[in-house]
Amino acid sequence: MVRTYVLLVWTWTRAAAQYPLSFTLMTLGGMVLGGLDVAVIWVIFTNTTTLGGFGLSEVMFLYGAACLSFATADLLFGNVDRISQHIRAGTFDTMLIRPVSPFVQMATDRFVPYRAGRVVQGAVILAIALSHLDVPGDRVWMIPVMVLSGIVIFTAVWVLGSAVQFLLTDAPDLTNSLTSGGATLTQYPLSVYSADLVRGVTFVLPLAFVNWQPGLYVLGREDPSGLPYWLRFLSPAAAAAMALVAALAWRTGIRHYRSTGS
Amino acid sequence: MIEVDRLGRTFKVRGTVTHAVQDLSFGIEAGEFVGCLGPNGAGKSTTIKMLTGILAPTSGRLRVAGLDPSRRRTALAREIGVVFGQRTTLWWDLPLKDSFELVRLLYKVDRGVFRRRLDELCALLDIGDFLTTPVRQLSLGQRMQGDITAALLHDPPILILDEPTIGLDVVSKAGVRDFLRRLNAENGTTILLTTHDLGDIERLCRRVMLIDHGRLAFDGTVAGLRAIVPGEDSIEEVVTHLYLSSRRSPRTPPPRPAQDPPSVTA
Ligand SMILES: Nc1ncnc2c1ncn2[C@@H]1O[C@H](COP(=O)(O)OP(=O)(O)O)[C@@H](O)[C@H]1O
Ligand SMILES: [Mg+2]
Image 1 (tube, each protein chain N blue to C red):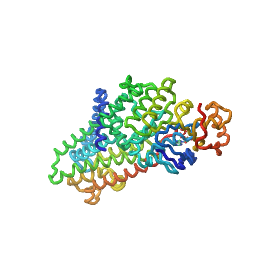
Image 2 (image 1 turned 90 degrees about the vertical axis):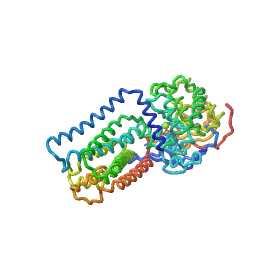
Image 3 (image 1 turned 60 degrees about the vertical axis):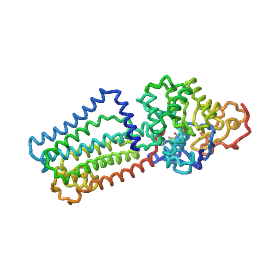
Image 4 (image 1 turned 120 degrees about the vertical axis):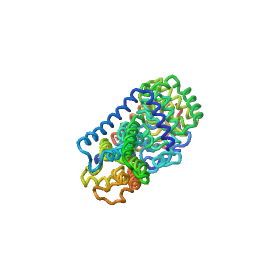
């Protein structure tokens, strides 16, 4: 499955490489948009010294981690949210008659690597933030765990939203608002939000485990909302639970798939 | 090769229930060439989608190459080639040969085997001239040749086609027909196609099935179909007669004759 994924991605990348100009422009465009996000944080810090109780480097750390997870998930699996287009165009039917999971086919369909620009951007911001922070050596292990869990959680949110589209073919924007909303939300320390929202993204849709809870551990900070300490180790569990729920929803969706009458 | 037993599929759209296919039973042996006729909305495409694993049935049982299609989709994919006349299974933006390369990757066809097979199919279907053309720029006839090639690159024992000749000019149509006939005769590929073109049926199919209102209204030879309306020789007239009579009384399909009536050579 991984092999097929890589081969398909490579084939589509080669196809995209025939248009180097549009590839370059798209990559740069993505980075400019991301740069604007960073500029917003900068502007905030020219007026105050902390955001939700966190200093600039700490905010950048949280931002970079969320950005890296989101951009990687988007690069690898973001195409999955095109499902309602595929259903309406009938291309999903075609994917079902191939001996490869429709999930892999959809993720790689017309794959363009320009989203890699934002992955690089997230990694750079995270690296800069870390160089300004004094993270104790015995806490560094949490950083890759956090990024990986984040990738899984964002992917699962996409798949969940896509699975819903099997039933409601008319609601294509749901997935989008869910995931980009989630991405924006995790860019800032959760302490800037209301307590209800924080509880929601901890216990219902576990976006707090993308960067916030494990980030508190890396930064060695108290939880401003006073939630239990052990929560900050639960990112892998939250990611696994989300992946399971998403996989079940996806299966159910495909079983209820009804194609289009024509 | 194909076993269908009391197959049914309903669709619920905003409270109204459509019985797209109901109580459909038939069997197809290896090496047969079967044509499926039926007015628009009869349930042909729905049947094809169930046979290919795209749709799960709501009732009944079916086996294709011994597999339950909607549950064993990936295993089934290696056993069947599928062509939709109404839309391509290729990729709009890619040149035909890149589409074939993607199909090769999806089916994990060995590179050498793939090249040999593609050469064979290119020669038979005469597609060598437009291999580098993006699919969106192909004519309907060329696209259909490309689609059929793509469906056969993994050498499936069964080929299922939903309206493969729709919209084709006479020359392309003759090309497709000739190819399918040879594939069935020389390769032994089992073929099931749906069509509105009675020429397809008369020239290709030893056996014809007529589906109407989701049910099997006729299953037998072309000669047997003709014999349903005594004194009527043109198959077109016979089919028109059957379609019209079923529209008047949709609940009672026309009588189904014995499986193989004495065949009259045309
Ligand atoms: N995905 C679908 N959703 C709702 N109704 C459908 C769907 N697919 C087919 N139908 C209905 O089922 C019936 C049979 O359609 P179909 O199998 O496409 O007929 P045919 O291919 O013989 O023209 C039609 O009434 C059609 O409207
Ligand atoms: Mg149809």
